[in-house]
Amino acid sequence: MTPIPKITTPKSPNDYRPISILPTLQIFENLIYSRLYYFFTSESMLSPEQHGFRTNHSTDLAIAAVYDDMICNKDKKLIICTLFLCLSKAFGCADDNILIEK
Image 1 (cartoon, rainbow, N blue to C red):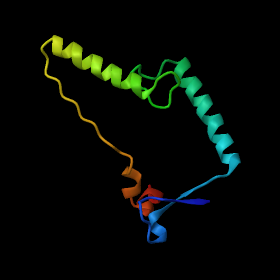
Image 2 (image 1 turned 90 degrees about the vertical axis):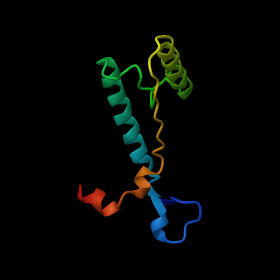
Image 3 (image 1 turned 30 degrees about the vertical axis):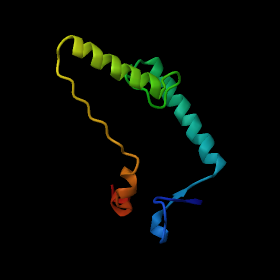
């Protein structure tokens, strides 16, 4: 395990996030990912608006799609409202004991 700090200046062991660097688990994760990705794409289960974790679907394309939708809706004189959320620290705020119980 390699401790990764959750915050900029960690002061206690609870300020670290354990990350496994075992190659076996990474190989297993890649295998599961590739099989699930193949299944979801072959069955057309992913929305065209899904850009995360997909090949040939970058964040630039996601931004361009949102911008294009906004321009089209503006041309139709519709109200445009967007909400952007950053969930990068969401799991750092969760209580580990509650997650384990779930």
